[in-house]
Image 1 (spheres, helix red, strand yellow):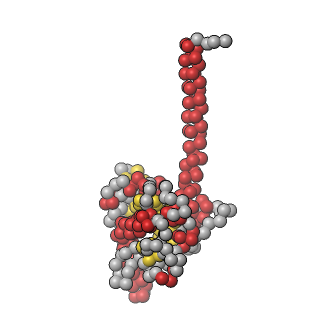
Image 2: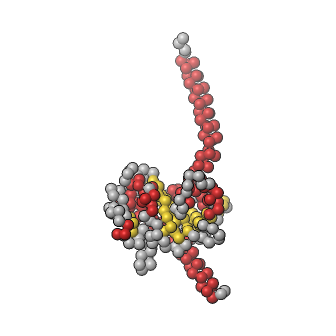
Length: 254
């Protein structure tokens, strides 16, 4: 039976409204679950900079036990609220902050403790640009503020088998134990060299093996690490000076 044009238009409109409503309800209903998965993924990456998580690990419980977070500004001062609203480090988008002038950005800091009150590593988010798109990660410094405890790297669209290898454990393991200062105490970061030899012993304290066929992505990683270590330098310097003063007081028995 042939339907009139009016019937077809009304039927299509009603069907669109019903399906649109169902999709909206699904989106609203699933939003808490989506937010929970995003938070869980963030916790995994932060912890992944300093420890190897197992599939059966209770990540939220480990995170709650071992991580203390805060936010600092470009001067290394802690920021507890903005416009009267409290700041939560885990909710600061390093990607959104990247669009601001470095002096105006917020910088999350994650303190990792293996046990007790002593902080054993400081985990810092980093963000930059690779060959095709954004790259980001978390870099962990031991509490000597110069030795890398580990790094986690990720990307939005680097080439599979080439630049995308920055997400591999084998590549990220190369950074462990490397130093961010040179022999004269200048902050130089850690540089992936051009080419790839597969010989870790061939490189100095501030270098790691490169990515063959992915020089631009490697440069992006180098720049990202160097830039963010400089952004966090005022905060790290305060921590280092505070630790030195505490050590002197302890030696003096004060």
